Image 1: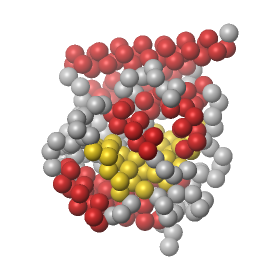
Image 2 (image 1 turned 30 degrees about the horizontal axis):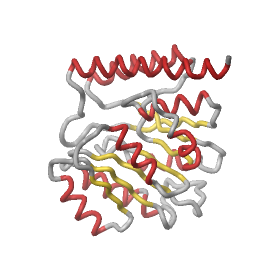
Image 3 (image 1 turned 180 degrees about the horizontal axis):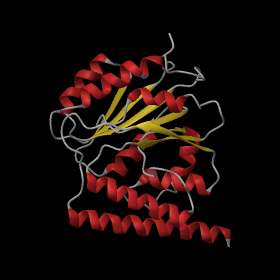
Image 4 (image 1 turned 90 degrees about the vertical axis):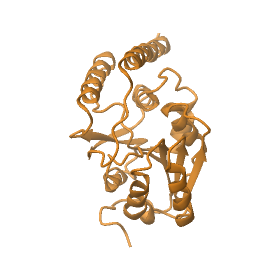
Length: 250
């Protein structure tokens, strides 16, 4: 039985849903249950939920129970946290399906919004990305994100919303072809992926998705000094990307 939100899906192509996890014991079970019930049960056979986990709280025990319940879950455990970008890169390289879907594990995205993206899957898009509207993050993060988006729009003359979105659907061969060249943004790997795809004229669709408050815990942010350092590195990365394409054009 198709999902009520499901339209225009090629049922022959399974999906790898990728989810970096770190210390989410308060929400992880509810998040995975939501994805299992609202999305994964309606996907083609062979679809998978792949998790990269570097938790030091009780998250691993919860994941062990979920693995026993849901055979489509695959978890890669890390001895120590080495950053979001490294976790994402491992998941990208280990994903097995023709389509890759990336999402956060904190429950702020709504699983059913997957179908807002999936309905465009047969329209020849290489990347279908969800851009958050009504973002429910602390004020500092919203302001920093807004400034960051404006800088990118100015530097690259692009009009996307939410450049660092962690809610998107991408063709596996396209991702594989780009991944080794994504090396300018130390942390914001998904921003660099979008920029390179736009600069190389891939076919991209933007869809608006909802964002909700965390039910438990707090949104993780960097201390002020580290935040400033990472912001500077991100700006340097943007200029490196821009410079690399100027060289190609000359």
